[in-house]
Amino acid sequence: MSKKTFTLTNDQTGENWTFPVVESTQGPSAIDIRPLFAKTGHLTLDPGFTSTASCSSGLTFIDGDEGILQHRGYDIRDLAENTSFLEVAHTLLYGDLPNRKEKEEFEKNIIYHTMVHEQIHHFFRGFRRDAHPMAIMCGVVGALSSFYHDSLDIWDPRQREISAHRLIAKIPTLAAMSLKYMLGQPFVYPRNDMSYAENFLHMCFSVPAERYQPSPALVKAMDKILILHADHEQNASTSTVRLAGSSQANPFACIASGIASLWGPAHGGANQAVLEMLKQIGHKNNIPQYLEKAKDKDDPFRLMGFGHRVYKNYDPRAAVLKSSSDAVLDELGVDDPMLELARELESIALEDDYFIERKLFPNVDFYSGIILKAMGFPTEMFTVLFAVARTVGWISQWKEMIEEPGHRIGRPRQVYNGPTLRPVLPLKKRPAKG
Ligand code: SDX
Image (cartoon, rainbow, N blue to C red; front, side, top):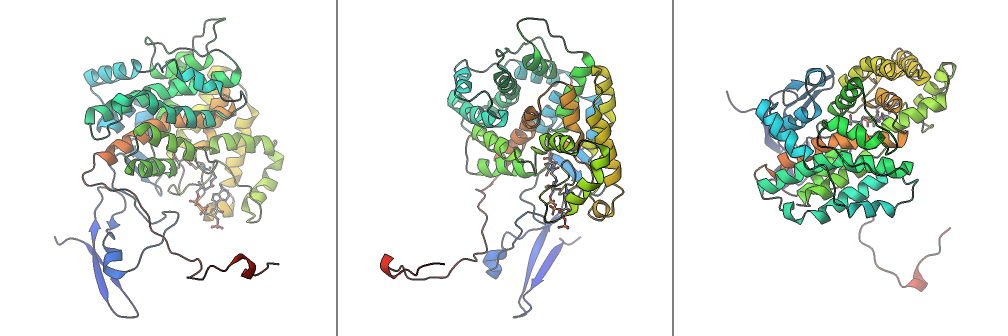
C-alpha cells in the first residue's frame, strides 16, 4: 500500500507541495511538515499546540473523546487497581511491567537512593518558613545537580539511569522536607524497610515525639494517587522538560524546569486552586452564581479542576479518584463537606449547556485535593505531590528523547508582527508622548 501523503496548494500561485504522513499505532497520525519552511518559505502557527505534535512517543496514549489513558498500552484503571507506583515507574522507564526479579531489583535501586546529601538541609534554611513548598522544590531540585557530578553525562546510558533512579528516589524525600520545613518540624530520614508510598507518608507525618504507622489503606491510597499522576503525554510541564533537555541540560535542571511549569494554576496548581475555589463557593446554594462567573468572559473566575485540552470526556483519573474518595475519607474518619459540595458542583455543571457544549468535564485535579486534605496534607503541598509523581513521567520522557537518534534542540520560529526597520533618533529629536 502506497505511503499516505498530504498536498498543500498555494491558492495564489497554484504551486503544490506534498508531505508524508507519520502513522501512529493508535490515535491521530501526523503530517510531517519538517520540510515545509524550506519548500514553501512559510511557517505554521499553533501557539497552544492544539494541532501540533512536538514529538513521537510510546510512553502514554490518551484518547480524549473516549476518556482513555494508557501507559505503554496498560489502561490506567488496571494499573491503579493492580500495580504499585514503582511498577508503573519501571513500565514508563523501561517499557514493560517488571517481572518479579526486575521489580525487586528496581525497588532496591530506588529505596537505596532515597537519602539526600546532608548539605542540602542548609538550602532549606535560606527560605522563609512560609515559603510556598513549590518555590522550595524549584530551588532544591535544581541544586541536586551540584551534588552528582558523577552522573551528569547525558550521553552515558548508565549515568542517565543513575540520574533517573536518584531523581525518583530523592524527590519524595525533598518533598517531605519542604512540608516539615513549612511546619517547623524536624526533617525525617527515609527508611529502607518501607515501601515508596509508606516511606513518603512516614517522612511527611512522623514526629520524634511519637510512633507513626499509616494504615495499609492509607498507604494504598497514597500509592494510587501517585500512579494516577505519573505521566500524561506532552502536557505543559513535560513539554518544558523536553525543551530544556533538548539543549542537553542535565536531568536535574530539566526536572526543576518541569516543577516550575507544573506550579501554574492552569496546570498542576489546579488541585490547590480547586480547594480554594470550593472554600470560596462555601455552600451549594452559591453554586449557580459561581457557574455564571465561570461562564462570564469578563470574569477571570474559572471552574478549577474542570476542562482539559485533550479530554473531551470524563478524565479517567478523576473517575478513579471520585470513586475512591468515599473509601479514603471513611478510612480516615473524615467527614468533609467539601466532598459533598464538589459532587453537587459537578452534577450541576455537567447538566449546564455551557459545559456540555464545550465538553468540560472534571479533570484529575477536581477530586485529588479533597483526598489529600483528608490525608492531612496542607493545600500548599498538593502540587508538590503532583510533582513527586510526575517526576517519573518527566524523567522517562526525557530519557526517551535523549535516546532518540538524531534528536535536535527545540527552537520554535515565530510570526513577527512588530515594527519594520526605522532610524534611531537622537534623544532631543524623539517625539514627546501623550
Ligand atoms: C492538568 O495537559 C495535561 O495533560 C495536563 C494534566 C496532566 O496530567 O499533565 O492533565 C494536568 O493540568 C489538568 C488541568 C488543570 N487545570 C484546571 O483545572 C484549570 C481550569 N481549566 C482551564 O483553565 C482549561 O480547561 C485548561 C487550561 C485545562 C484547558 O485549556 P484549553 O484547552 O486552552 O481550553 P480553552 O481555555 O480554550 O477552553 C475552551 C473553552 C473556552 O470558552 P470559549 O472561548 O470557547 O467560549 O472552554 C472554556 C473557555 O473559556 N473553559 C472553561 C474552563 N475551561 C475551559 N470555562 C470555565 N471553567 C473552566 N474550567
